[in-house]
Length: 506
Image (cartoon, rainbow, N blue to C red):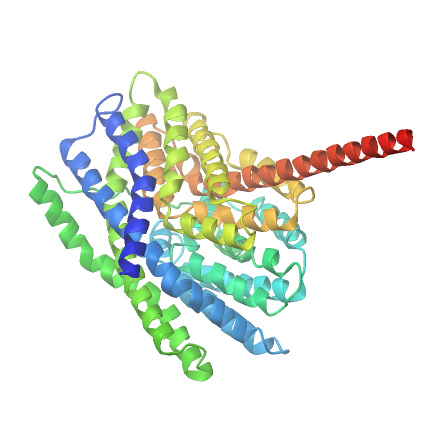
């Protein structure tokens, strides 16, 4: 009974997240950018799957991925030696990244480099940086120090990388932190931090996602420097014609087996590591194990429904919308429409709900999920608007990324460390499957209609979505710091007035 109540609550939350973007696309389809009937039917079918899938997924993560990650992180971090934990963290990073479905898509987009080489290199990058992130938490190293060093290396390498390869490199950072790895890695951070038992351990639990996002960027930039690829083509998938609702249902039916297989492959390494861990430590008991098992089933089914809905239903709608607006009489509408879509689409990212809940719990409610959601929405709204400006003008992405990261790293010296960790983690979380399968096709469709270069002008939108929350969330933290200082000043002033009055009467 309690479980059914939780599922109903999660479904209500997912409906509130998905309905706004569904309503926006539907209104656009009957006004400025008419959709073909088949594409609209696919989109509406996909929206239904998103609502159900997101509800099951978030419930499953609460039941399984979070306790698994916390337990694994806490047990591994107990030992004084770091060699064996480092090896385990490296393997976790490599195996979970290799299984991410979005990484397979990225590999197909880079024909100049063999798929296996690209996947292994990116996975090794994530594994190495997961080890660095775990070591940072154990030693209490300030996150901003590592971010400053590694982003200087990133932009230094970018100067030697072919221009058409840079957007793909930065996009890879968002692609590899997918909906399966993000909740598990965030919980892993909580578990590692719990072994420290000091005042800053909770705030230091954030930052794993941000550092793990740097590994793929460095890996793909290095491959670009070594291979010097002259092309990185991308072909838009052509959807078969849809004439009836039965045709749409059959298309989803044929797609389901692929997603059942992909999600099983993605969950298998994490489940396998957990079984090995449980066999060695016996940390969890009867009812806990049953709950984790049920949670894994919910996570699996929810992610299958979500990915099928977003890939089959949302991807063609995004491409058609972008192309229709760009080829119309007022292509500049791409900017305000893109900003409106960006504001609401981040709410439908499955891992965003997990992050905002964890932030609220760790901060004891001082950073509410409402404030986090608003800051993320504003960030993605700005990023999509800037990405549409790039599509219209062909602006080099480095003109936006370099000042954006410079501002973000500068803010990290002005706000409490917890805001920096949350902000940089949020970048990887916001750039999830909704960005890759709706916003990227939207930008590609618009770029193709305008006759632009898809690799330099459309790609990079994932990188933009991953960058702007770093600024908005840290700005929220700066505002909180200023408010706190003003409140203390007002309190000090009132106390001084009271003392003056007491002196007068004395």
